[in-house]
Image: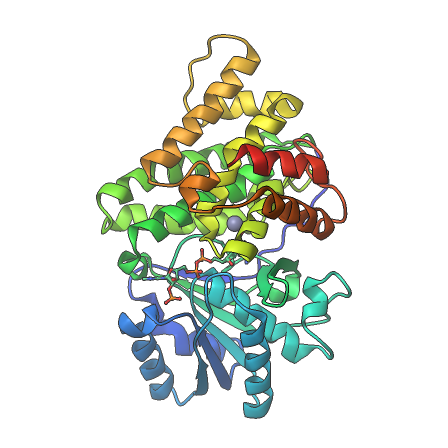
Length: 392
Ligand code: NZQ
Ligand code: ZN
């Protein structure tokens, strides 16, 4: 078991109609001038944005708005947001949407609170010394960004997608009303469930310092999301299932399922970020497309965890050698992805990559992780390329 810090300062306000409390929450955390940041328009179409601004108006809180955060959010909009905040003397950020709007808001917050180019943080050049306070109204259960310390931004020049993590970026509050996720396209619901499970799996498939309590939480979370993803496939308006998945999304990425281990593997995410940067695919679908190839490449080096996963999460029969059980677990996971209409390779993801493209992604990925990375198995550029090739 490893020592750990567990820091989850986000106040969670969970349940039906909780968005009506947003003005009270902004005030509680000292906001007087708010930037409302959102995505491509789903919050306008659903009427949520209007309800939020009505609530702020009624409470006498002034605000400016900036929409347009795209999936795999762009650095150029972050720069625009920083300028707007400085011009309007904004002292609080309110992200209304999913991981993309939240991550873009976090980046804006770093840019306002620190001198110099905000991309430096994502380019591993220096550490932020603060972030503008941020609140969230979540509309999709997926990234866990509503409680996490991370933010992922794509620099359009060179299509470089990078993450930056800092406790300064953890939201002050997260409003989570599962009903708000009922307008999601089925594909996005499934992408979200995939991402939630992967955040826990990245921390689960490690060779370092596992704890019984952490494993139990992780396996319970994985089983819960697996079950409820199928319920939502058949019954998208099921409130209980929406709620289970939404809360799981936060717990999967707020650090809980990493307590006591070595921090996790994270290579499926790193490989996916190259796909997201180059082909602009939905994050969850990209993860599903790459995971099986990654798992088959690494499982022998982390056999005890893959066996445990097969038995305790995928309900595989305890029959055969450890390797056979581990492989059955990987196959069962891929069957699950197919059952919720997620891809299990790059072809199904719709990516037509040449071998040169795969080499470029492997190279960028290796540079991004500083040469090599992984806990289930340490991967270098050659290994990354092999996984990309296997996923075609
Ligand atoms: O942009 P709008 O119009 O809002 O539409 C979005 C978008 O098209 C739509 N949507 C969201 N809520 C909706 C809705 N449509 C109808 N009804 C609703 N209630 O869904 C699409 C996806 O939204 P997005 O915010 O992009 O999804 P997600 O939350 O999956 O975020 C993905 C981004 O987060 C990054 C990913 O790499 C990707 O860039 N990640 C962030 C992490 C973090 N900060 O901790 C960790 C993750 O591993 C991930 O890398
Ligand atoms: Zn993710």
